[in-house]
Length: 165
Image (tube, rainbow, N blue to C red; front, side):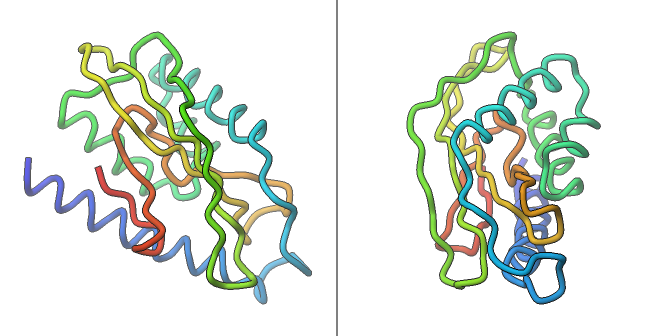
């Protein structure tokens, strides 16, 4: 389990370093300026979609439709599966909303829904469902950095957006 945790963390860190460069590098995108702030309702809609995809076992859509990076999403799913963690049939509870402003004036802020719930085996989780407007998409698109909501992943700005279970 320790080895898989190290692999998961390494893939996540690499993925988030890439994401951070995409979010902060607006000179090479179709954006002329920073997009508008992320609305909580947008993130809640993506959480609802994540719950629907996950409960159907449609992890391909979860990763391709709402995740910032497909490979990081699949790594999170693999980590959760190795731990024996699967979503249950209920939606998570939103406990708090947090916005993190980037240190770069050209970067999108991150809006985080701090959520909790119960997995299919009855174990509890607390996770961060973190959203951004990536510079590599349309200015109105919102994507999720941590889409595997039942995995217990936390978004930590102090490490440039690395996720740690």
